[in-house]
Structure formats: structure tokens, C-alpha cells
Length: 257
Picture 1 (cartoon, one colour):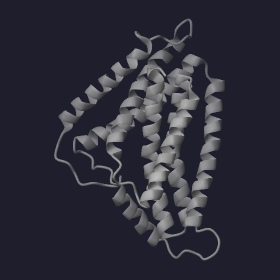
Picture 2 (spheres, helix red, strand yellow):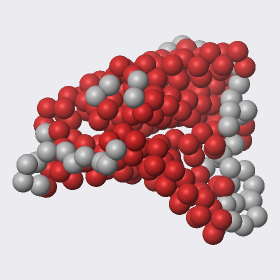
Picture 3 (tube, rainbow, N blue to C red):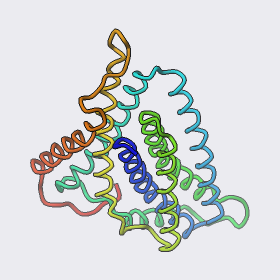
Picture 4 (cartoon, rainbow, N blue to C red):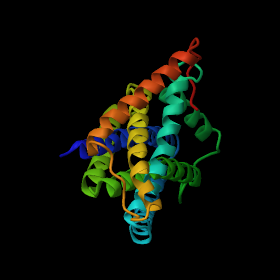
């Protein structure tokens, strides 16, 4: 595989692990506290909704946009996601935002589930169903966008889908083994890495997509082609470290936000 394919697989794998760790925390809290049957029903409904969303979004992007416009649109989306992740990573690393704490999130979700009233003996427990559905769907949508954007831009959807599936299965397997929130996963560091990859690839494809505004309407070419990607990753890393150094202050306590 070339540099783009390796970067694609790494970014999608890490992103799916991070998002599914967060979804698993919500699912575990609902299942342990209220009803596993209703919780798993919510998870299944969310997966069906995500599959439909993936098919519709992928079809719309590939059908309605020419190649250069597709790269510009996808690159823009990746930049939006990447800069959001990088912003949080920079603020956390500089001590201006609390570190993400899965144990604390789990405790808060359990408290919310316990205060939601008694679980009915028959029928669905709609509280655990809806919370599980929302948690899995919202976390999954970001993974879906990353899979679609990376897969279409790199022209390698199988790698993107395969990396996402591996990430989900890894989190599921470890979650079953641990039977609790995966608080030991270096989630904040992984988010930093994913943010760098998304920002770098977003920059790469956005610039290529600017060719839509030229007379030929063909994608622009970077000097060195895919070799520009490691340079962009290094550039974003250097910029982020400079910002961390500039903003650095004593760390604040962990939070669930």
C-alpha cells in the first residue's frame, strides 16, 4: 500500500476506536444499571440507521459531484473534523481543558440511569433504548463520515471499511473482557493523533480540489504527490506543539465533557 492507504487505515482505525470507546461507556452504563435487552435493541437500531446513512451519503457524494469538487468537499469536511479534534487536544495538552475521563463519564451515566425511574418488567425500557441509540448513532456518524471521506478520496473504500470494522471489533472484544469502561485506553493521545491525520489529509485533498476552479476543472497535483502527506502531518504537529507551548498552564481536573 502507498502512503495514502497507510494513513487512511491508521486514521480510520484510531478514530473508530476512540468513538467506540465513548459509545461503549454509555452502553455499559445503561445495560448494567437498567436493561441489557433494551440497551442492545437501541444499539441494533443505531447500527441499522448508520448503515442506511452510510449508503445514502456515499451515493450522494459519488453521484452528484465531479472528482475535483468531491476532493474539495471531502477535504473541507476532514479539515473541520480534524481541527475540532486538534483544538481539544491542544487545550487538554496545555492544561486549559480537562482530560477526558471514561470512569467519570460512566459514573455520570449510571447516576442518570438510576434517577430515571424503575425499569418495567415487560416491554422496552425506553430510557436505556434511547440513550444507547443516541450514543452509538452520534459517535458512529463521525466514524461514518471519516470512512466515506477517506475511502472516496483515496479510492480505497475496502481499506477504510476494514479499518473501521477492526476498530469496532477490538473495542467490543476488550469491553466484553473487561466488563466496564475502557478507562486505560490512551484516548486523549489517540484523539491528538487522529486530529493530526485528519487535518493533514484534509489539507491535502482540499488543495487538490481547488482545481475545480481552474479552466480544466481537474484536480491539482502536489509536488511529490503522496509524499506531501508526511510533510503536512509534520507541519500540523509542529504548529500544534507551538500552540500548546504558548497556551500551557497548570492542568485542570478531569471531566466528562
